[in-house]
Image (cartoon, rainbow, N blue to C red; front, side, top):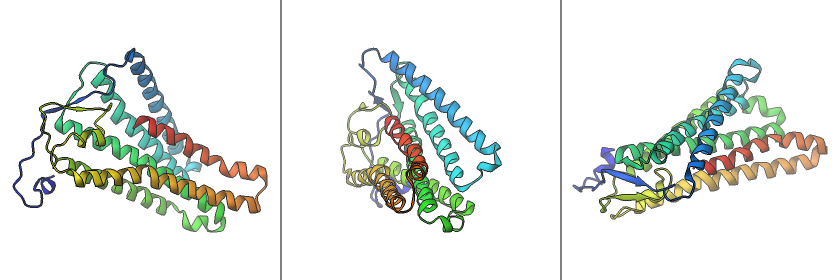
Length: 263
């Protein structure tokens, strides 16, 4: 972080609040019901993702490139919900909606790494299905265990690097108010950096980049792959074969709203 705090070599003092106030669920009628539902959603997520990972790990028939991605997707979902839900319950259920500066940035980092990894895993699943249907004879060569492990590792490295840069840029912002209210249910990037009172141009530029890599690029890539798949299937497959080939799309588009809901 010293690299970012140096402000390109200039001696600048950054004003940082001792804590942030997270205002997400404050004032919502019958908020207790939200917390109860959120708690059960978390339990279901933990149990469901743990079962998925356990089944894939124990069944050697599932040790295929596609299920490597499925395993990592379940892990990323478990990682994300564990980073988010317990802290949200602690903030609002126990009226402890103040979070320290360093804890807030750490909270933001882990939440965004998790959601970015979930999105990147959906891209990997789309690529796997694209190669399997359009280039079936080349699938065993193009989509190997080594390739998929390398792809997942590069995704983790990319996600962590991007979020380190974003958090580093946040440390270069000054907050002139003694109490900074974040209008979200967690330390969200947009509501957080918008409260700064110094030049936030680099951070706002990266905010646009974050939206692109979290939403527009993945959505465009996934839709593009399935357009190619549909075109290929209309030429060679029967109606029953088309439905079978497109079944993995249900997994991808089932996971997508859950990501949007959580983050």
